[in-house]
Image: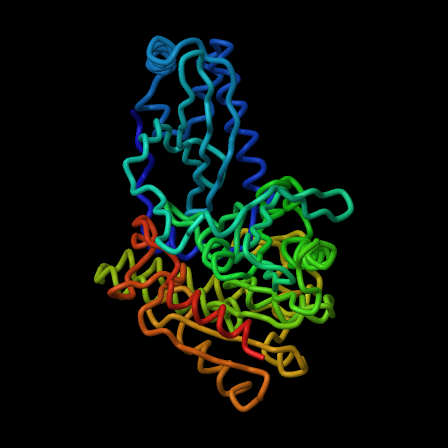
Length: 440
């Protein structure tokens, strides 16, 4: 099959932290679907015109026809295709398409350049990666789960309510995701941090609500002007309201667990959800996103040990783009114009929010923790939280020397490759959260 041009790991990782789909990504979804429509109609010359110059030279329409014929022989007659996932990868964009054939469903990866021309098209290998590990603390005899829906006007997000079987009048925790589209388990590779947390908490008498993030279900809404209100805040507030209506829970013991961006926004959410008893800030940035992205880029550059001029220039260019995201006023720009694939409206809103100062004004209980092996949010953030809130009686802070960004114990700091290995959320961490919630 045909492979996409090389894209450096540096760029790929840096963009993992960005928040959502740009208008360009939505357009690429349409381009990918149109490409498969042309193939299904046997319009190979028209489909080949989607390629960039390099690809057109390598893959004439006759070769594309042979490829399509072979796919239909191997998997049965083609039935339908749908773009399901997209990522900004520096100079390029990748889109994953699930194609349904009569005998099987196969996934394809398509690479696009900035002019929306296809620079790569290949069959996505069947995953040989590690599969999800059910944590030892996930004792299903101690808890049960049922489907729920977190609703706001025009939106309905499927979720899961996990409750202890051997408890009454129990606390409940609402789990709020980090950046980017995410399912209810906050799945990354074979890891499912929110599923682990729900199981660990419920086995020890604490219920939880987790739900699919709006950016995954309603991605089409995130092509123009939006802010963290639409991305995260509104649904978190609705989930807290839902928690207060559920039978069996202690309405005075509702907590919010915010991971990464969710932790950064937790103080804002708390100002809109007065029924919350407390907040748990997990790997929560205390600094601006630009600081984190610059730090990540430099860390990954150093980790790569690639000192070639090309990679140095890529780092320099990336840091210049990151600096543009520090904008605090829209000014003469259009609100939907983008920086790093995210609208200016988003950056201005986020940069004018001070999570540390907002947290200072709260009189709710707060547990703030950070893993020292987290390369996405650093110990500098933890120290900033500690400096600002460490002397407050309502705040507990803890640094875990072995935890990474997915809250699992690791031997080293590493990179995103670590996320492709199955590891459960630390049981020590879960026990500490349970003890903190139950502390009177």
